[in-house]
Length: 388
Ligand code: SAH
Image 1 (cartoon, rainbow, N blue to C red):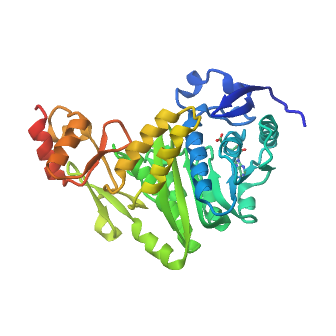
Image 2: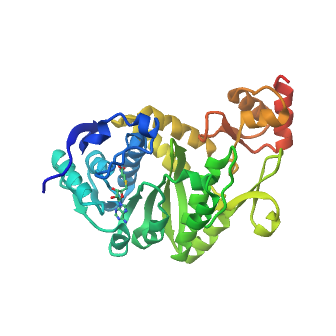
Image 3: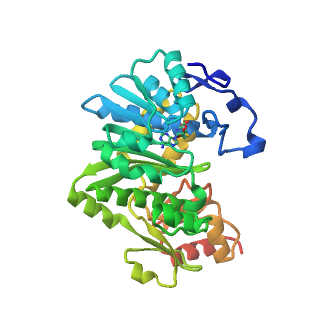
């Protein structure tokens, strides 16, 4: 079938890709430096998502390494096929990939990309993702939409095999971070909170939503790696089967209350929140699993990935977040409450540890950190060190 738009060849990771020509234009003026990317009515491709694709390829490779059977992988919203074709090409053996997109033009480009890389382990389908999810089963399902994944999550739990992994992106950060609170409530059934910590609340609202959708199906989630980067949220979760697991999993759902000038509190019961500033229901459990993050850190340095260094830095910070409270602060935020000069994050972490607290950087921003110190101790350390 002939395409009704021009394409040009490029490369991402170790894979050759044909992409629609507008993708190569300078869109920075139109869309800003980091996205939302290129959406020209033909086929969507966003160069700002390269690291997201890099990490998913490493994730599939890691999962395939430990899988006892050949893995069935679905890229449910494949667009150009950049992700699906790269997974098929760069993960080694032991995987079969289904690349699905409802758009006819997308399917044509995926076909071309499969041919270009001489791949035999990709099946291309052109279906509504929800229809596909109720009629097939996979070990790994990637839902990477332009916008919210909310409409697909329920059916992902129908289609995922026992102990399978869901990889879900949300680019609707404005609702999740509280710019459009009503939209967040409608899509995710949760109230966001717009402040310095909003990106962490946002990804936890997304995870809380995924956990509740899974619980309907007697499925529990175990977050493997969840992060915020550029203009999107992304999470990898393992899905466990069982009523008890699902019920226990919901113990991780709660609320975050922000106290004026006095930090956060994680709260389990909504009746404690009346009249307070809060976000939730959201996921209060871990964002990452140590073994998975360390697995990625082991294999990524061996791979040809365009955003390898950026991914490694992100994963190293994520590893430090494990075991920490479900919120972070920034040094700027604390200095404004303490009325002192900002303190370098590295120095603050050192002082907190010297005082016997756990402390680590957080990936949500360069000045973000997590600690188990109570807010008063945090202020005391800050005031002692910071210049007024
Ligand atoms: N994951 C891609 C980007 C996807 S953009 C990447 O990494 O490059 C979103 C894609 O979803 C579009 O190509 C659109 O055609 C497709 N889409 C939207 N709704 C769909 C649906 N209900 N079923 C299947 N595909 C859909």
